[in-house]
Amino acid sequence: MGLHQSTMSLAIHILACIFGTGSWVAINGLWVELPLIVNVLPEGWDLPSYLTVIIQLANVGPLFVTLMHKFAPGKMKEIVAIQIIVSIGILASLLMVFFWKETTSLAGTPRSMAFLTLAFFLSLVDCTSSVTFLPFMMRLPTKYMTTYFIGEGLSGFIPGLVALGQGSGMTKCVNVSKPVNVTTGNFTEEVHGHQIEAQYLPANFSTETFLAFLTVMMIFCLLAFVFLTRVPHKMFHKDQVSNEVSHVSATELELNKYISERPADTQSFSLHDPGKAIDKAKLAAETQSVALSAFTKYSKHQLLFIYLLVVWVNSLTNGFLPSVQTYSCLPYGNIAYHLSAALGSMANPGACVIALFVPNRSLVLLGFLSLVGTAFGAYNMAMAALSPCPLLQHSEAGAILIVLSWILFSGTLSYVKVMIGVIFRDESHSALVWCGAAVQLGSMIGALSMFPLVNVYDIFTAGDSCNMNCSL
Image (cartoon, rainbow, N blue to C red; front, side, top):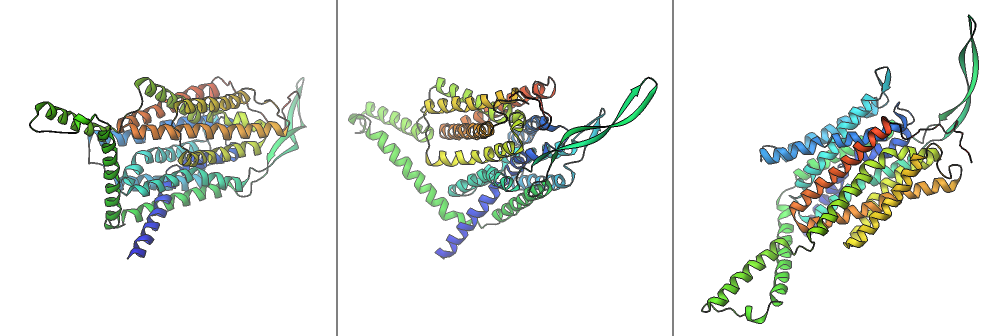
């Protein structure tokens, strides 16, 4: 019986992990595939800025779910909602395999409407997963929640790993002949001119294959969820009892420690002494407060600082910098952009693992790491502003620097975000809600600020690796 229960527990761990990978795998997959996609779609180097705005628009999904819980509690069935959400993700991923290259002419300009529309639905699925997957996982014992978060981290790690195996393809400069009409007086003749063009050699496997892989991962996510909903509840009973006993024991130890620190006269109660009875009532209220609030450690000014940190960090990681990654990396070549996207995506779960084993809630340290991450982000932004002729463009050192800068930018700020999440988790549920609002505010500020700079005012300049005349 014990062996059967341990086998079932392992199976549930695996299912929870697979379920977690479906949370953000679609959007993470699109980000790491952009180095190949931007060479094909008409938006070119501007495509990431479109994607950041689309992801922000997709937050209508979690907003709708939140409003349903607020104004129609109990009306929305959680299991049905998750099944619909994941099914939409599977359908959108499957359609992306066949239609991602299709373009539509708008005002005489070709646009990737199919890709952008399907990207919106994939973003809708991933954003909404944040407010549907977690509440479902809370039905399970706490130990499975940890496994779910591991799976959520793998949703960025696995696509990055597959993208590294895919490779970026190679760029070859080819001298091509093109007809040119030359008019002399009233006579026009066609002559053939020669120019250098960049031709992109295929990667180890196609973008369609990569997108199909994302579809398979979404299917596995749905299957894992279906199996999780069919696990007998009696399997969780023993775990839940154990968790509750552990929680009660921890609370009892905490309260005993708190009571032992009280002056001796407040520990000797006498029902015949009204003064001490009042002390007893006060102590009971205080100990109840301890059990419920678990000692709030941060002042209002410190909490304000943390919230501002959340807004700033997320504006950088979810808006300002992703919008210009093409401009900061592609001048150094496709391989540099490919490695920056793939390894940067893998740095996020890597930072989460570090935070798991080396947690540090020091606000001084988090502020310092935010400054370090901002410095790397400033370097990335400066190279984007200098595009198509950034510093050290024609040297390996320049490519290595830009790749390392993107990895360290993602890694340091990911650690800060994880530790802030831990801080707010231990503060209160309300603090977590406001933290989520600060995340969305920062992301929105970054994305909406960069979109006009990239697509309207053309602050950043794209280049062609075969026709860039940059002074050495």
